[in-house]
Length: 167
Image (cartoon, rainbow, N blue to C red; front, side, top):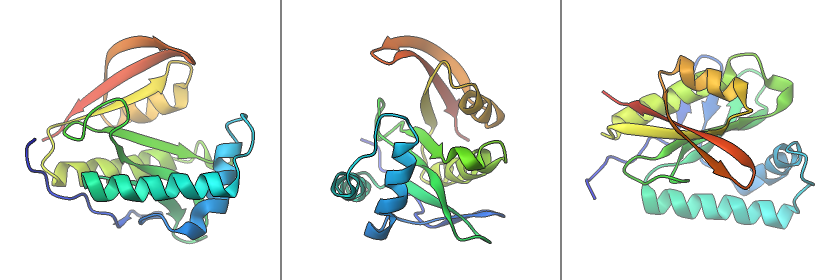
């Protein structure tokens, strides 16, 4: 494995701040997961997800980070790098925001900051995997310069694999 710099875990944009997970994020993350329409996870389950994220961050040097609006201070989702279906050398960029903030450019803004953080680690390529039905996410990735690589079929349907070379 090539040596990569650790990703910056505190990111700021014009409208957003991102920092590592805290146990106090559990309630808001639970609400975000509930929006997926598959039930509301228990707070204990969400705390376990957060603990797993923090462990993965320590092991990989990359992170999925909670996203907050700077002015309002509210949690609106998460964005970051994960191993996911890929590798620590070529991680996936992932994001999910509350539906109430969709269409305002927050996902693009957060993902651009994460993309810059990935470049600073010395990585050469990022991936993203998105359900083929998720047109808004595909548009965000297109704006960031990702290109379609292939399609796969999984239990939840068709998945688009996208990639972006880094400078």
